[in-house]
Structures are given as C-alpha cells and as structure tokens.
Length: 575
Image 1 (cartoon, rainbow, N blue to C red):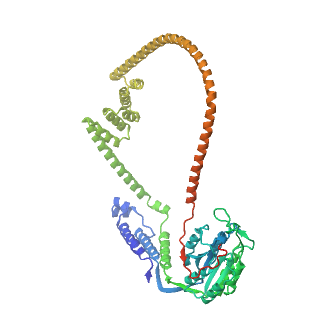
Image 2: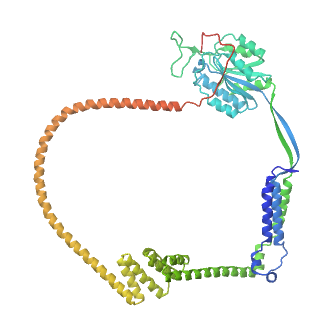
Image 3: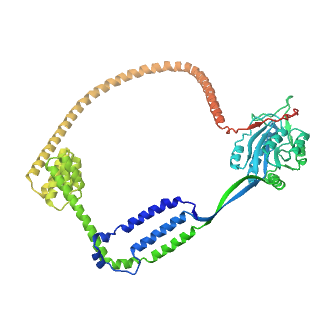
C-alpha cells in the first residue's frame, strides 16, 4: 500500500497529536475552582460517555479523515496509450486572383474562414498550413495544437502583397517535406484553379510521392475584376481590366491522384465531405505514446470508519436540558465566582489608578494626573477630577467637556462643577455663558467667591455695552459729514458728464466713417484666415488618421518561405 499524497500525513497528523495532548492534559474551569472531593460531591454521575473518552473518539475521527485525504492505494499498474492520427496539409492560394469579389467579401477571406472550419471539424487529425502564390510559405508545421493554429490563421493579414502567380508544384514539394514521416500523404488545395491548363508535371510528382490532392474550388464561373487594396482594379499592360473566373482544369489534379474535387458552399458541408473521405481512405499512424497509472482506491474505508465513530460520539452526548438540570447549582456557583473575581480585580485596578492621579495632582504634575484620571473616567467624580487637571494645564475647552459629563445627585459636587465651569468660560472670554453658569451655582449654594466672580462678570459686560454705544454714535456723526461732501461732489460730476457727452458724440460720428472703410478690409482678412485654418485642420486630421491606420494593422505572422526547384513558366496571366 502507498499514499498518493503523503505530505498530508506529515502536515496534519502532527498538529492533531499535539492538539490532542494539550486538550486532554488541560483542566476545565470547574477543576480550577474546586478540588476533587468538592467536585465529587457537587457533580452527579451520568450513564453517558465521559468527556475524555469522547475527546479521544473525536481525535480518532480526525486521524482517519487525514488518512483518507492522503489517498491510500494498492495494485499500482502502468499503462501506455499509443495515439494514432491522420495527418494532412492545407494549402491556401494567396495570389492576386483570390482578391476577386465574386464571393463576399472576397475569395481569400472565405478561404481563411474555410481553414478555421477545417480546424474545428478535424479534431482527431494533425494539420499543417501552407500559403502559396509564385512561392510557397509555411504558416505552421504538422500540429495538434489547434488553439495556437487558430490564432495564427486569425492573425493572417489577407491584404499581404505576395508574388504574382500560382505555383502548385512548390506546394507539392512543401507537402512532401511536411509529411515525410507519413505513409498516406493528403493535401487540401483551397484555390480558384490557378492559371494553368495542363498539370502533367504536378500529377506525375504527386503519384511518385504518394500525395493525394483534394481541391476545394473557391470561385464562380462569372468573370470578375480583381479589386486591389487601394480600391483600384488590376489592369493589363494595354490598360484593360483583368477579369478571372473558376479554372476547372484544376480537377485533373484531384481525379488523377485518387482524391476528390468539390466546389465551395456557404455552409461547412464541403469541408466535412473532404475530411471524412481522408479519414476513411487513409490509415492512422502512431503520433506519440502516453503513459498513465491505475490504482485500487482505499480511501473510502477509513472515511466510512470515521463517520461511524463520529455518530457514536454524538449519540452518546446527554441532552442540554439534562445537563442544565443536573449541574444547575454548580454552574451558578461557578458564574458567581468568575464574575466576582473579575469585578474585584477591576476595582483594585481603578483604586490604584485614582491614588496615583491624586498624588500627581498634589505635586502639581497636572499632565501626569490627567493621564491617570483618563484611565478611570467612568464616574462623575472621575470626570470632575480630570476636568480640574485639564483646567490647571490651561486646556479650558477640554475641561468644560469633562465638567459637562458630571451628572450627579450630590448637590455639593454639582455646585463645584458649575463654579469651575464659570471659571473656564471666563478664561475663554465667554462672559454670557459664565454669567449663566454662576447664577445656577448660586441657586444651589450661596457662596461668597461665586458672588464676587458673578459681579466681576457683570461689570465687564456693562463696560462692553458702553464701548459699543460710543462707537455707534461716532459712526453716525461721520456718516452725516460724509453725506454733505458727497452731494457737492455729485453736482460737479453731473456738469463734467454733460460736457463729456457732447465731446463723445462728435467723436462717434468720425469713428463711424472710419469703421465703414475698415470693415471691408477686415472681411477680406477674415476670409484668408479661415482658409488657412481649414488647411491646418485638414493636415492635422490627416496625421491623426494615419496614426490610427498604423495602429490598426494586424499583428504580423512569421512565414517561412520554401525555395522550390520548379518555378512557374506561365507568365501570360501572372495573377
């Protein structure tokens, strides 16, 4: 037996064992507060499983589940699978004649789509892709990586400027090289028929090398002009427009090599017929072998045992209602002890902090005192003490905040709070609030110091009011004097304006005559400026569009050119 994932055992079993040791050796809460004799008298024995036994069962469940996760297996065997496939080459005609638009959008674009359809349908085959015109170019060697092959075909720019002509002989040479390790060599030609009438050389070469040529005729019988990338039509030397149609002489290649010829269709039925015939007539050949292992799994045995033990552990647990009834007094006693213990500790801590704060306050260390008082700022007295410490530091606003938090039924504390709040408002020069707070304090207690503070605040308020009235009287006198001066100045200004208006009227008449003469000149200048701007805009737009066109170019695909021994001799129709 072996484990497929032995790391699970090391990373999980060790922590489980450590956890088990800590839990079993750790005492519970009742054992901390009571000795064994007291617990024996207070507790009631039950018929159910003990706590330690149940914990052991739970740990056994964890161990068994960990073993299941590690995947125990037996009877390991290694097998080999030999992968067999039928390989073929797709050759796409990329000569000038494939730009004819008798098929929308043109023959070449439809040929590119047909290759993608072949890749989708021929999932059990191995495929190579070749482009041919006057020369042949390898786009992809034999492969079953169809995702990468699709990317290459999609990135293929149908507007590439290949050499004129269609050299099918070079395509046969490339196919022989790509399929050199394959007995049954198959080639799918996607073409409009090329520009030859006699294919004896190609047929002879195909027979010698056992190449079967399947042809997909990608054109119509209607003569169609060839539309170039610049929008113009291809012309002959004499200036007449070139027209091309399907060259059905290409049938000779397929019929004389025991293959098939088929015209294109808008559906994918044409390529399905071709591929089905290739798979039927060609023998599969070993491509590669893969090794894989088989096992007899054992993980469900420890898993089933773990679930069984888990059911036993849960079924032996007493109900919550029974636990509560039997241990009610013990639980209440424990809770009282726990809460009383925590409250005593908290009271001890607060008492020490308050003593420290008072010591710092007596030593006039007000910053340290305020820090200690903040720790226990929960009661009205603590807020009052913290406010006093902040007042001594000169932080009157913060002191007021803590004085306002003092809410108590103790009248003496309320009086002290209000008195100190009045002092804080005086320090902040807020005399109205100081007056209000001092009056409240005097209602609680008639104190001499508070009365004196209130009288000083009232005098200060009277002095402020007198100063305001004196300033208002002075402002009114100054405003009356300024009014008389303004009236005199206004009269003079009116007289000056009347004289200025007369002079303006005479000037305007002269300016009107001058403007009439200048308007004609300005119109001519504006027309010239508009023409210049339009030219500038057109240049800028042209540059902008040129940049966009450069960015819109498809990602270039690397094509490997194949040097053929046989060159095309027919130059009468080099398209």
